[in-house]
Length: 238
Ligand code: APR
Image (cartoon, rainbow, N blue to C red):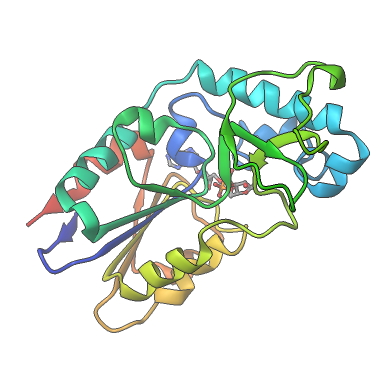
């Protein structure tokens, strides 16, 4: 069990494994999304410059897959935890799907962006990201921003800086419980969060997933299993 005391501040980091039971492929697990695409071919500024049509084909497909998926018991357990802990919970997700919001979460920090949002490709453009569930099968169908830039997925690509890092760092500094759910622990900076809290006085760290993450040594305790099955059983609020 993970015992959460009234004085505890909880930092939760979630990865693709959280949405696996909802039908959204992970990137590196056996059903890995990466079997079909080499991620560098479709999720990087170089890929966007070289072949924006392929990039939009990939993200259109991911939008279509995600639109069919529903939250699983792990998402629901996290929504309940948010309700109970309020501002004592900081939930940072690497996931770009909206299943946590569909489960009832209102305060999730999406450090890698949002699949159902798009934005202008130009960094200097002042237009903010906007909700966009559309698929773009051809380059001609991809909208052009008022500034003339091409519209791209609102996703943090390899080689780009994740969002909200300052807020995330502050929450990490103050948490007394760190829980990572369904992340292989190979993509930084998120993969380094567990090391940041390891051994800090009064802080406990846990990992939940079916396989050992690459950063296993930085967790005090592991709960092996699928998030949807394990998570609802192990959160004990005092
Ligand atoms: N419950 C919990 N964990 C699971 C489940 C499940 N049902 N199924 C698989 N997993 C675990 C796998 O064992 C694996 O360790 O989820 C992890 C998924 O790892 P990755 O596919 O590497 O996903 P993630 O760690 O979130 O990737 C980080 O990499 O490609 C980038 O931006 C992308 O946010 C992503 C980042």
